[in-house]
Image (tube, rainbow, N blue to C red; front, top):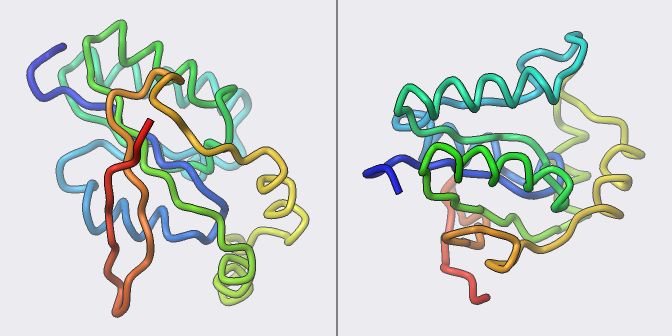
Length: 155
């Protein structure tokens, strides 16, 4: 593994706290890549992968701030990390549907996701495991006053 090179993958429902977590704890040390940054682009997945590959090739740590609900989304990212010798760290935001729907409802304009989108993500959401290819896994929970509790996950 390249010394200190890391790809962080955030995994969870919309409005589960991923972006706030990213801004507070990872944005200073990682390039933030999110499909939300290019909502009208064609081939959003291809564009995301290009940005991830370019950053890792340049020796920059990356965090992917999307829902990333299943191995279908994780595997290309994990493979890119392996190609560049980066450690892959997953951050799991355990689903709390009522809280996510409440936070989502408080969002303004384009930041708000239709509820059907949250339910669709919930149907596809799967807890990550190390056998999926992650080097490290953490569970993240929202704590009081905008903080987060981060705990290592088993297996």
